[in-house]
Length: 591
Ligand code: BES
Ligand code: ZN
Image (cartoon, rainbow, N blue to C red; front, side, top):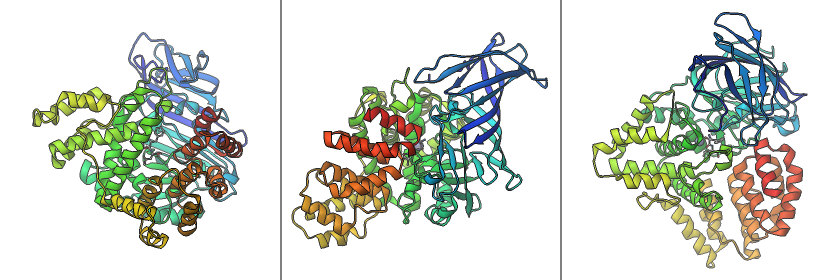
């Protein structure tokens, strides 16, 4: 397990935070009070997770009683999990309070300079706790097996706004003090904070978007269908349990596409492309409000219960709101990403639904395998039992496990009892085992199909075999992001430079404002050593920190000696703007 916490002895029930964001020192400092339940009456030591924290003081108190200092010890750090903080807990105590500060290099935080923001005037701070980075800015039991409620006071420079993934308590505008309350019990990886020049734009009664002022209108337009997505998801899987659902658009260095922080999804600005073509990301993060936030993987090995379910739900939501055509394109693209992820994996178990994580940081096993193999598994079950029955089954799974953390074994038992048994023999145990353990897509999978993408392949073939650029450009003018991505990605990796240049000139690929299209184009340019695209690619790699969009470019470049040199040159300029987790990935790759 990726935690040091002795949860068989103590379990945190409620957390009280009082933190100050100091942008000069790049530190969060203050107190974390953990109110706990004792599981083992004889236990005298509570073990907490930390990483790179300075611990100044630890106190304990009995119910309703006064605080008094208690002894503590910080173990040496391990690279995978950080340092255990061992706190002496007197008999009768039911809370401890730790005074601490985070390191400027905390892995779960990124401190941005004004230059790295859209407005260029104010600094920005955001947290990203999943999988095990909450411990780099809060001392806690950092495991998804423990759920807690919390209250927080956050103190920031007066001109900035703090947003947490919780209910905001009304406060005095411009005071620099913000208070939050999270009434639903959540796992630690869902604690989240952002501080910056943030403004709120409502989209519906219960949805809205936080952005820097310059992006407010574009973001609200891009995400305007969020309420429709909520209604679609509720119709399928039951009521939304979290009150509001807002989005918070981060600066482009955010290392992920999106993060399902409760009540407010954190999102990359790279999906704001003007035509809503990339809002499956919202469907995905929203879906986590059921699969993940409501019913949570108990350990990181069970991650597919979060991401596989969510990927399946995401495409069902897209199907309702945008139609089957887009959903099927996403399914095909997912299948291609799955094959690529399996090729890229260096640990065999990471090609299966159940990676072996012992001793490893869960981030090291991260790939789309649990997403796509998990979604295919659920589609397989759907095909065997029918959509209606499968939808009712999933809804029941969420209802009966709400606010719980669950294991794969629990899911299999529930599956067998409430679905498999309704049609004995239709799905065999051997098939289930294959879905969990196979390093490939099982033969029983229902393969997605997309007429739209087949048409793209026809247009590609016609052009490659001598068809006119005009005809291609005419067809392409109606393409969505997904069709463009499929077209470019399926072009041969060695092409005539003249043909590439002609295509670039006509289709304006090097200067594409769409980061997904630019990404696949740059990969094609690297493969073909099409240097005309490299200056734009370098600007892109400096401006964007989303791992999915930049890591493959560095990897492709690093495959040749010349390319490796260029990768190192670009990285030298880009690194300081990247998030610590992106830096970690690239430091390891380019060392
Ligand atoms: N929960 C994940 C992001 C994550 C996973 C962060 C593991 C840290 C550790 C989020 O829901 C996600 O999957 N985001 C995807 C986008 C989605 C549309 C597939 C991403 O960021 O690429
Ligand atoms: Zn996800």
